[in-house]
Length: 263
Length: 279
Image 1 (cartoon, rainbow over the protein chains, first blue to last red):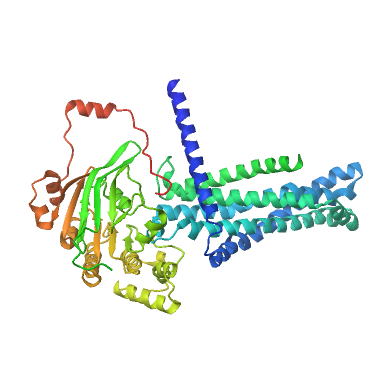
Image 2 (image 1 turned 45 degrees about the vertical axis):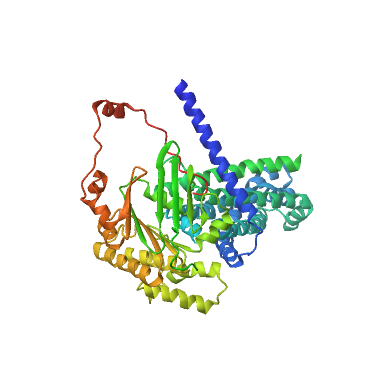
């Protein structure tokens, strides 16, 4: 019994310590976000990797979500005889909830895992130590461009996902079923307010920060991971942890932001 | 930068103690390295030599003691000062630590691009000179994954000397290389000392290369210094650990029956603490 409690305590202490390290990591990067010189070329490279290369997956994912949403809502709405409201229902649910969440989860899975593995390998290969020894600040050199690129590209990807998703709803409602095209678009125009767009924007920024923080932080702190060893196995372990932890945090933050902004 | 008659040691280590969690790694270690010499730090695995190297570089923080390199207190100095010091230091890591997403020449150019205002052409010429010194001309555009083990080590060496440091550190330079390539690397190191007048500190367990390139040798065992002296002094030492190392004799601790029983029944100790966020 005592053994069990002491093990539990050790676990809690370990987790708190890890959280502390992650927080220190975040604060260090944030404190260097605005420090000159600005590495615009590295930021562009990362924008290409995190943003441009994610576009196709995001388009694919959001069109299917729009289609499924349109399909399901149409069935229910037509029973009630309000299929004219389909446009507003699809647009609002995409802009406020589904667009940001799905985009963030996709980016976490695609770019987040890659960033985590990249930084983790740099840690286990002593490349981060080599940077330090060359008097190059790894936070500024590696992390800051990734942070900027993610913070810029995720809101843009969310915007794309919203538009494509609404178009997917159009395909389902108007092309496949019998919702009048004018009614669909009128529903979209009529219901979206700045408040909804702002909510989606705030969410996408929060999610972007979570993605890049957890992904790079987990890789950066690989050497402090106490569960096992360092090399390839350690990289795969922290990458899995990062994706799981990041995804859960995104879902949790989604609820939190909704609750705060709606209330 | 400094004149040659300067006799103060370039590295001074006093009563250096480090821990990983509760485990003692270095135990009140004293060490000094003079300007222009090749100092080889030897010891078996787990003797603390890698930790010593990381502490000298400021990557690990010691529990107590002081480390002074070129007059800078590594353990207590600010980040900015530490970076200023590191510009005069080159480090060749065990695995090379080349950046996988940069080509060979980009790897070598990186310190120059970050720390100098030289134009593109000058930087290219300077890095090509260093690559040529390491017999790597013509491989500019290769990626690190396309290089052989020996080439990676030489490339890491080229990158480490591109800023013309006064002080070079090597971590296991010949580990993982075949004897011929390892011997070549020894020649490069001696060449550096002769032509660029560097102070060189090498951490290794390779006996042959140590005897060949060292001016002085320091032998570590369980975090304590066993002996430090010239190659001949070390050879003539009658210390058991030194003789084990020199004659490649296996060393196993002799335990009393009580100690043996205690070792077998000991509860597994907690996992070691791997250090601070900075290393």
